Length: 233
Image (tube, rainbow, N blue to C red; front, side):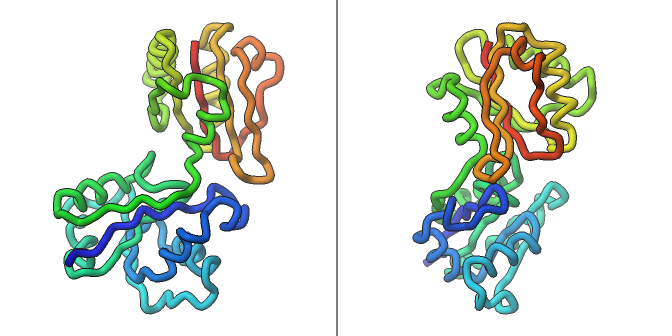
């Protein structure tokens, strides 16, 4: 029989694992010895936090990130075809959303390998449900373009799309959060609602929904803090 590909959740910040990852999930993770990870150091640290005696040296880690070539993917699943279970980890939260994890999951399906999602935190969904915006009709855009012209075009498209009642969710690299916030305040209509959800599940958690005009009087301090933005005109 083939093994299973487990989609492993990680905490979103430095809070304890028990606060955001169920004990039943960590009980599964400690039994795995094959992993596909975005960053080996993060994965090892997580496993040690779960179990101080976790046999790191007896485990196999494959790196899956934005530099991974497509021809490298098949070898990462060889252990599963031989009957071993494999764990897939992102850097934080759930794998497969705004990271390369979807590529290996898609290949697992093509190879007839069972895929098992494990319960854990997702900054995207936590931001949406706490925003007060439309949780029945929404779109996740991932990371906003970096180049100025493309960014401005995307923001206008997002706001226009939201006028049909669809909440729009997007992100930015933490050190560019304030630049994105400046662009949103400059480009969007004053009546458009914007939720800023930063540092979710950490001691620095900040979640607030206001109109663009209201944000202009007191922009949030979210420089270099992981954040999710939810917008609806």
